Image (cartoon, rainbow over all chains, first blue to last red; front, side):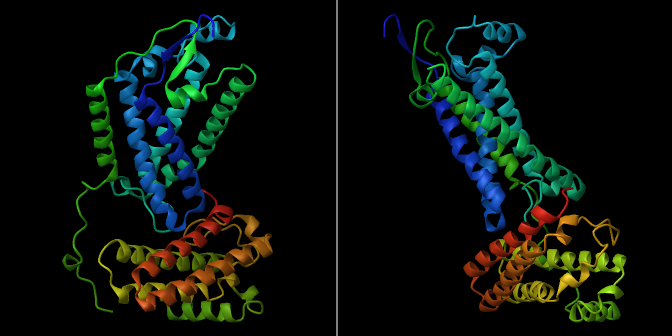
Length: 230
Length: 151
């Protein structure tokens, strides 16, 4: 490997986030499509994903170099340069960055609509009580529809990775597993220390707590409601 | 109420013979009412699983679902009732009326799950109730996914 050096591209929290999200997404599609008793797990995994997303959003500001949104934000100029073949740098390339933001937005949309959705059988999202049936039905419709967009984005993402590995001979998977990559130019990621990690995790946990609805007032105990004995 | 119920029963018993006598609007109304009663029962069972378990309540609810499941609700899917208004516009997809065997299988699965639900409710075994409830919900979903328009 002449003239190549090894740099840290993806810090550990980014990688853990990525692979946890992969596992969770598979779990969500499976539990969502099968339904039945698994819908309860769909809800739980959905909360996990919401926590992961909030973590990633914070990490996009507080994380290390290549995890930061500002570093890879896809401006038209960058995209144009990339398409002309003039873009060479570690981290997300400008097209990949578009994919990252689209995936994050679509996943966030699913997580948020899921919070107030209902399955028209016996399951409701944890914040259903806040919005009522009509809005819940609307959100449920979007949740069912938008999942197709999300799946399409994931398929595109995976197809792009395969294209890079096979055609461009650039293995994007290994760096996402091990963190480092052999590059001709570029510096190792900096920042995203322990304090940033603690803050990001705390905010993610706070978001999960808020979304779980456990803070909602308890329904009145059965004794408080008198109904006829028949 | 009683007359309507008796009529519904009659319609169910004489499924083919009495078909023409069920008006589309009534058929849709009764369908929606039956699903509404089952929705109440499902919510009630779930509340018992999630909160304090009351065996009697679960038995009553499971029996409602079992009774409706075995009432021959197919008799309410009269020709022409793929569109129309009962308590609200029907959300059935026209495919339900043309996908004979597939719909029959879904209905059969639902009946079996409803019978199982009633059986385990009577036993009072909470873990078994939970499992049967999950399976029963799955059979509801099977039909909703394919034969109910999304809102």
